[in-house]
Length: 439
Image (cartoon, rainbow, N blue to C red; front, side, top):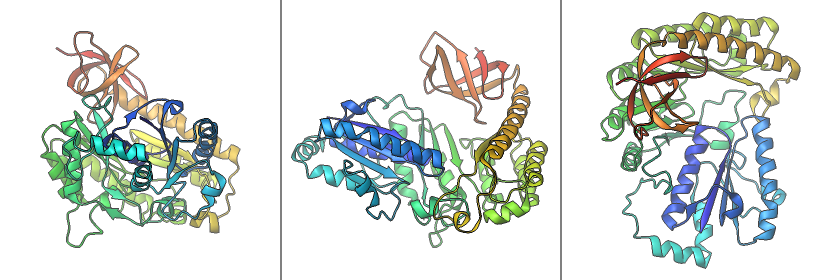
């Protein structure tokens, strides 16, 4: 029997879906790329922006003919569309869906399947096939030994409640996973060939703060750094208020933790930041970037920006442009504000920036980002960099530097997947670089 996963949204959704896949692999199912061939179909949804929610609704609709043709197919919808407090509305809207699961859950689907005799028998037959411990994750058969980089959730939910964000309402309050459980998961990934892990949290720097006298992110990084087989460690997403000196010192100290920091500013105007309930000023953010660069020379820094937030004036948008021009960050993830029902901004702030103006501002920042990123990447010209090779793409090997720069190179002599290659950069651009193996 086969299963299919379809994922919309962030890295956390990808990690959640991978955990569902792990549970299905343990039962004995195998992965298929095609929903039409699957006995179990799982859709992981995102509602951070309206466009993502629309895509999810559209995809669920495409599953109805599959259910009508093959009624025994189990269809599952999970993620932020369902949320932690499902009220039954989705079941009425999509009666062909068998299981609705909150973000990061797997038990409802597994329990539903165990009620089916065919799946129960399969699970019993395969129970002893894999020697697994609590916390182990079993990758799909086609990824074992070939998946190079994986995401590992360490904090579920969020309690910060920025006014624009739906995540706390859909993923629940902040909950840190036990350090031993995370470490065991990373060990099991390493045993299956994974070389790089990215530790995930909505505010990843707050890991452990819901424990009493428990470990923090620095403690966790030290544990993961000592796991054999793991070559690189990343973490995201950070928050300016919680990126401490201790954490930056830990990144500098540990050899496996990469020199790449993702710390969103969201806007370059203090009034907009107050309306967003971000809890810092642009001056605070400037000081943080200065500190990061002082403690981690050569590090790359990524940020998030929302354009067209309610009430954002032309002058306030210009302040964001000016801040990015001044700081010259490596990556700027750009988004047009999209009102989310139930958020504070939706209840209290009118969505008064016209859509065409949001689009214009987005394009202005995108052009700026392309120019800045191109200038930063030119510094790599003729340098030799370490690349962790992830896969092959259009005849070239593809991987990333420690600073998360995408690099392509040719080498026909051997299989480079999962290796650390020394690559001399010959051509740069804003989004990627091309080089040759340095022998």
